[in-house]
Image (cartoon, rainbow, N blue to C red; front, side, top):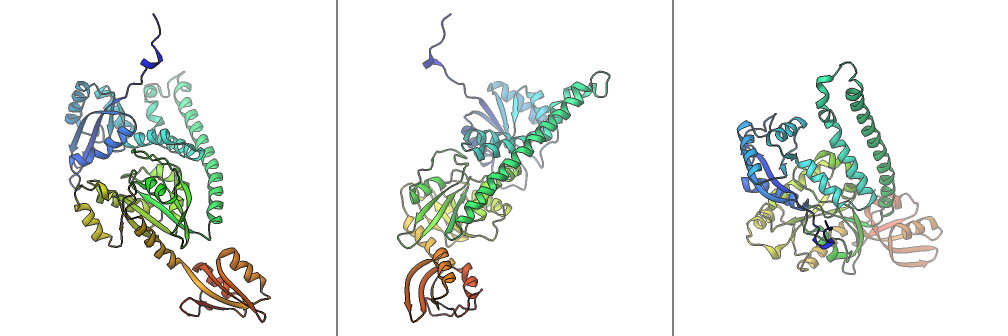
Length: 437
């Protein structure tokens, strides 16, 4: 029998059946319940063959859906020849085991699906370490369930080794690897912190938003960064920082970050903490919202929740309404505009509104930096060196042992100037700031 030709070989896409539970207090419809899960599944290269939504107060502790609905799911999975059942919630090991036994089909929960996508898209060493850490922290509490087939032998003569010993060995190996990964990530994190500190004199802008909101497209439009752009969830896992020239009136460092998502698993937030710190260290966050989505308001709220979780509650945020060129219905845009009246509407793909966005960022930049007239003794070389190192010196005059400088300086440094004797500092409007701290 001859071997098949290389051109005829193909990888079969898994046939996925999607399942969700909606509680009475949720405002989501059955359609919106699984729309995001469907996008996640397609990103994982699955083929959607069916959907099932159950309305109940809380997921069933044994089968997630309840016995009747679980039996219906079994019949649907069989009739559609599903390879995998994907649930839009995190399931306990017992729920997964019971559903798999009942349906005779592999069951994957929301976190496992997202971790699979992250593992596929991780390119840098840091991203791969972060994904592995998240996967192990997800797996560790499920190790016991993986060994339940030995439970009937527990304590039995001659079986303690295969059961208890192997489980404890697995636990030790996983915990040891988790410890090693955290150590490696701390080294990378310290290096990243040094990089962030080296950017201290620059105005830092972070792009945040729901996954696939157009952050990478916007970064390319503003900086020619050449960042990968794909119509997929979590196409960007690694932070990239580029210089952004603000129409010849200043510059900022613009950083792209990993996209957020509704019900982002907590262990993912923890594992990607170093990456998300780009947002916590930014002077200004640009919250990019895809207003062409039917659930744009829900996605915007989800991003705000994640920002609060990672400690960005007090950061200055400028809301950016993206993809206005793809709007079919302006209802969401109208509601969001009332909630965020200072937002800027753009199309990152077509370049519409980018000048208005730049002007809005410049206004924020002016709040952070002050243009100062600094007068001090010419013998104070230490202050002169400080101004050249930490500020943008616009002009300098030396006359009669006195130096006058016009300098643009971050307001955080005003207190450092006032530490020097015989120094006069005035802003562009003539205000004396010598005593400011």
